[in-house]
Image 1: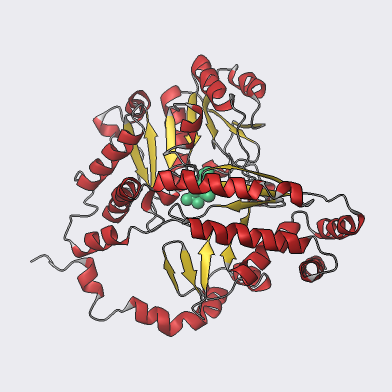
Image 2: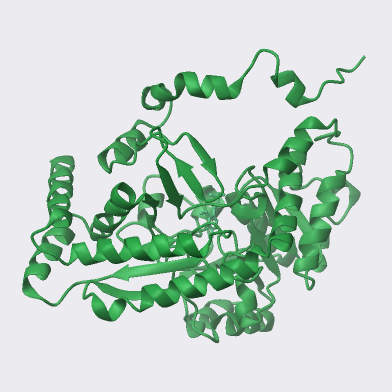
Length: 462
Ligand SMILES: Cc1ncc(COP(=O)(O)O)c(C=O)c1O
């Protein structure tokens, strides 16, 4: 007799995960130091982020003292759908069966991107990029892949070959051959690369995550036209920008562009379960899966798992029912306006840019002498360190979790939950205002923190 209990039932009698979490949470540093990444433990401790988050609720996180934080890096909940999968006896991951939930999710994704026809599911962003590279090469018979400077497409070998950042690449070569980097927003460079007619795909983030770099108005449409002219597949990596993040379902919609392939992951599952999707044209897909003996020529064991599929379906439903994309557009516009209005008031604040709830707040060298001296000392110790003087007090004093957008970057990236409220937006803008204002006072608490960070950097390099 097959065991009729669901996975959820089986977990109930002897294994209580929340009890285990409560019992052992105080050992998390020790566990990670011993069994996982010790350097990450040290980083979080150094910047004071080891507050021991206990629970999350919507856009909020609660630490061990039950203090509430606003998470500007996160997604939103689809817990009910996940619980219903665990409670059911669905025939999950039967390899020689056709998953119903995968069919439904694919149908619904394509309804959002009707000019594409087929969906390939994966477990993560980087796996979507790997699939895109294989599909592009396999369907065109060409080997070249063109990507942009400052792109981030992931860290497995194919995607790392399209991520130029030295910090990620050093020590791991050789990478994939025939990957060519060109400047973002440079159509002439793109055409020069494509003219060889050896390029299978051009892959681009519509808004670059690292630095929150915006495309010029005609750039994406121009790139799509060039790809068409030279027989190159135009791949939009919407792993960060997609699913409503920028106030549209896909960021490319802002510029009326229809890519040949669209990559989605991250909030496709509301941030709960690893999942990714490659949406593509039928002509490309059919060249890869072209015969019965090639029906599984690319794939992965867990890629159409029921939890991922259910989370995806639920996320699309939440987007629609709760008007999440409209909220992202409205709250994003308000945030952008209020933060931009601070630029003329603060000499260290250079630019605020973005679309919807993907916003970059960029800092740069000041003009006044006292500030200039402090800035120079900080930058000499470690390029990009200034942003930590903003993110650390935002976290410690204002309970706002934000991040610097990449190594040596002067831009702080805001990716708040798409369900954020007006009140949360005031929390963000009020906190930024206070911290930026404090950063213009020399001497002051912020620059004392700067001195500590410089000393730390010096000790590290000694
Ligand atoms: C634009 C983009 N592409 C690809 C990836 C890689 O996704 P993952 O971390 O799921 O492998 C990321 C992750 O941050 C991303 O932002």
